Length: 369
Ligand code: NAD
Image 1 (cartoon, protein in one colour):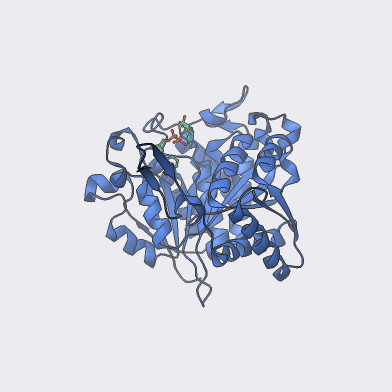
Image 2 (cartoon, helix red, strand yellow; image 1 turned 90 degrees about the horizontal axis):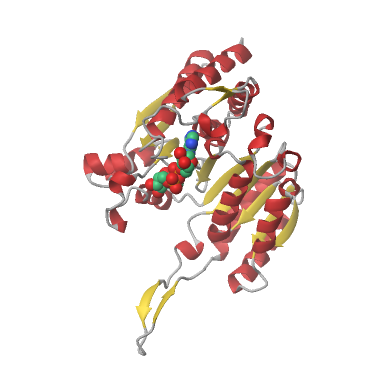
């Protein structure tokens, strides 16, 4: 039997624990049926960690994260903690994990599952079969650059400012992730910046172009970020892999998510740099938040969390076959007509979180039989 894989599960707040519970069913299924064992440890993050230990990402959680082979993250935040000062908010839990684990490459697929093409804000034929991946740099750029602040000038007027800054090394390492991914997919990569008006954009384009020489099988093109937003909103299927800075990637990946029309279906991965043995820190989470408006009602869609686990199997453990099995099981459940409220269509059967999770496991059973 393959060696144990150390998995840290951080359910967090709101619907986080509800959807993570459904992943536990899938993990149990894999343990039973595929003869892969996981050492699953749970930890505290976000509001739950503030309540228990007074910090959104306590040192104990950091220790667990550093020792894990992969992290499955639920979601954090909620009205209960909204009045806390900025430095103590639940959302800072994820930032500490990203920063201290060096998670610099955020992978956000935007996939339209055929049974859900009607849910998109675009016409179904423009999105049916959409399967693109946005690689967003996630530890640099304008969200972290110095100087930043709000100041009062000698003449009494005030100004706010941030700095967009990228080192060569920061661009190369995230570009390599995007090129590797493109090489395994269609061989097409679109790098996005504003080289026409930003020096950091010119530099980004120069370094990405140079890095392309390492990946002769990939066809690289460049696009200005504003044009990319327009193209995503009108002809998204032209793209395969998109590479962008922290700021542009943030905006474009939300836009791509909106185009799919199903927040409850979209997973993500955030990867660190591999060490000499090829091991890398990595965190997997749905792109949705803690959805306080529906928390505790048992109606959240667990698919994004389940699909985040599929990404974990693929990226952290090289278990492509099992990842595909889970993705196919989710698709089969949708084709069979089961829907949680967020993806409901007329004529489908509306179910809650646990029925959806059970249905995925039942499909896994059928496919593995
Ligand atoms: P949200 O993603 O939590 O919810 C937006 C809307 O989508 C809500 O109507 C919600 O009910 C619905 N929704 C989200 N996930 C769903 C699912 N799986 N199934 C069915 N419906 C779903 O975003 P928000 O309302 O802007 O934020 C709520 C809280 O989550 C805030 O405290 C925010 O800071 C936090 N947040 C956390 C993360 C994270 O943990 N990484 C990400 C985004 C937001």
